[in-house]
Image (cartoon, rainbow, N blue to C red; front, side):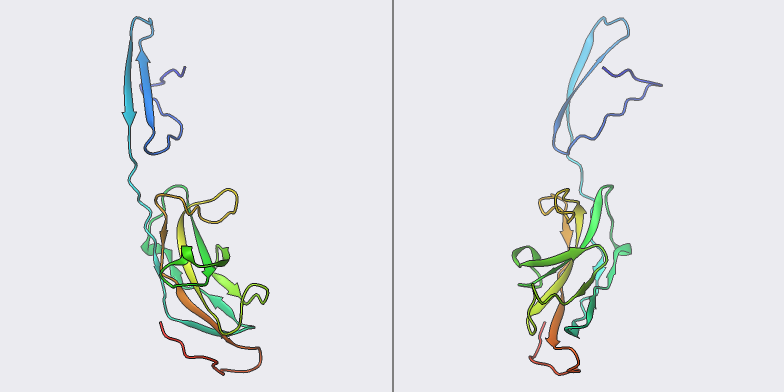
Length: 168
């Protein structure tokens, strides 16, 4: 039992959509009033803007996603993660996730990537997955940008030789 101090009671975190039963009784324990509460919290998470200008580089280059989070809104427990993946630019969850981080900088990893293959970088915002450290893809308020094209099209020292045409 928690006593109310100065007429105010504040509970701990209650997951959105959960039912809570609140019982109140006077200090003489004469009677108890009980009420059930349920509240659905509104998602305020709003992803910012990712520059979708293609990033074309050689195997020794560095891809840097240009993300402006100031145009978005995080709720109290959101994190931002940059995700490098293959597949479709507008569908990062159905591609293969190559890696993720919190700074948007990626380098070619020959053990996971191939020259001439198209990869994308998307930005996700949502609750953190405590197991992986990435965004929890099951978060009901998760937001993500479409992916920016990041093509590794040449080997080190080969200059700007393009090995394929690229279209967005």
